Length: 145
Image 1 (cartoon, rainbow, N blue to C red):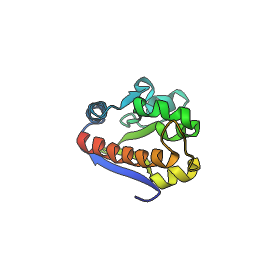
Image 2: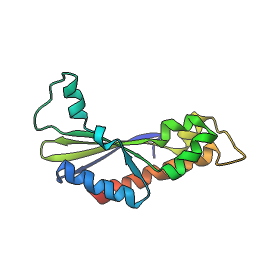
Image 3: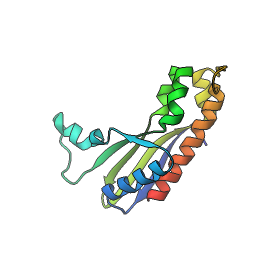
């Protein structure tokens, strides 16, 4: 994996069906989707006066695995920029497009400072685990496609 990568996927499924399937795939792996009631980016932009086509849909799904990330934040609060992950799903013609950013474990450890902690995983171990999380996100998207 490059240090930073945009993961790109596409499906012919309607956006709502993909989101439902993705939600099931995520929950099966212990992830929680947060703020689904606020995920509609089209509604947000329209509420601020931005005009978007009537048939355009775009949502931002926020996912997290709280059992792992909750304790990790106490060791190094700067990890918070990595523990909340976002998957963007939007329509493009008849297709539903899926995008998310992934980071290499080395980049994450570099940005956090390679700190070690007596009571939990080092930033290096956290980076490795996060890289594995991005691979799991790819699996979840693929399953939902």
